[in-house]
Amino acid sequence: MKTSYHPFFLTLTVAAFCGGLALSPLPVAAATPAPVQQTAHSLDSFKPQIAAAETYLNTLKTAKARFLLTAADGTQQIGTFYLNRPGKLRFEYDPPLKDFIVADGLLIYFYDSQLGEQSNAPIGQTMADFLLRKDIRLGGDVAVERVTRGGNLLQITVVQKTDPGAGSLTLGFTENPLELKKWRIVDAQGQTVEVELFQMQTGMKLDSKLFVYHAPKGPKTYND
Image (cartoon, rainbow, N blue to C red; front, side):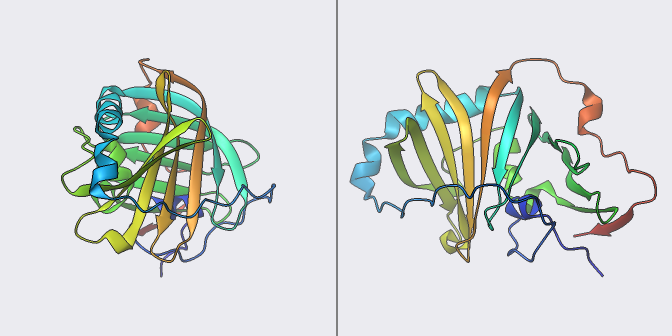
């Protein structure tokens, strides 16, 4: 028997949504605009911005930020995000939730404090793999599907080249200065989860213990 996944953990996997932990409802975020279809010619006009975003992501080695997560059902939660590339990240939800997500370089874990259980999956089988790679490319096994400007953000949407219908990842950046502010994942069924980042700090040394899964007392464990 497997535990059901938390909505955010599901956004990091290539699997379909199958339910998850209920979060306290807050106001629903504004609906995502309909996708803008772009031709290869129109994408060419954004080549400098795409290249700059790729360079920025590759120089983003360590980071700490506050996050606001909006799940597919409109519920929201806040917490603190840590990044240590390649391979490592951590999401800690603010109290009273004791949930957390941690990637240790090999596996990504989600601990559900309500169930007292953890789920895990290899990073390479999740959408977290894109942001955690040593070398991030907005090309190769992913393709830039569209680039838009609006709401003071440059937004770049990528899909898997081999299966573009499996879902998409949209990265949102401010441009002056260039900084990652949000990402949005849309699954094959059209369900959307978005993470917004605030108070971003970069370039600091982070405690290695942040990126190790320490099992709370007596959890049940289910592997993906």
